[in-house]
Image (cartoon, rainbow, N blue to C red; front, side, top):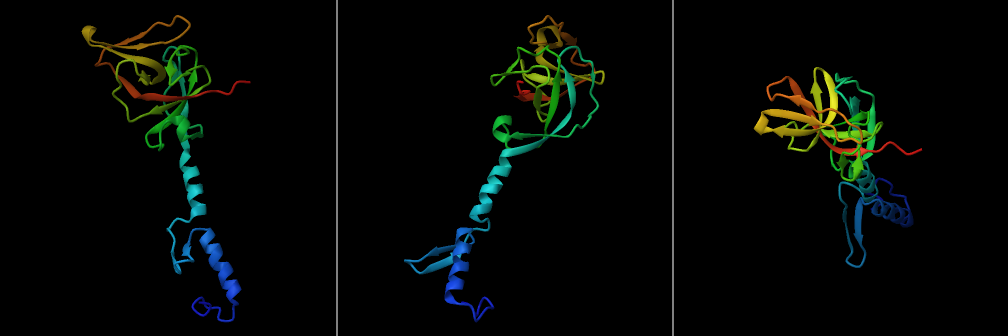
Length: 197
């Protein structure tokens, strides 16, 4: 074996040591009682844990701020870096089509996303692939180039879309005709809370 490895003068103990190290790292599988040695998986055991951990931490772009009040925050994407968040916390496995936006104001402080309320300064995680929300979904809407976070209500009986606040304060709803120029930029799927001081 030493000759095959290109070190013909190496001691058997040194070769054994190297084989044991390769086994520990998952490159070799050694079954001594059966006298079998075979190549391990392409992904060694020590690397597998690193890959699994890396998959659990997402890098989600932060594209600015959205108002939790009147639609008054300008909506042009304003990249502010990335939010590093656990995939378990975000409720998604991949950051594809996902972005984060910082909530500004209190008009959604009673909205509940998996037990978490949307309060001023929290980040909301938005799935941009959900552009046609269901009734009562919390969405990011773009109206007159301004972004707002609201509860989406499709009122077919009155031929209108209502964007409702969900707040401890009294905020007026926003009423839209289905043909108006507005965009649903995605559904809020998670709230990342601002740390309590």
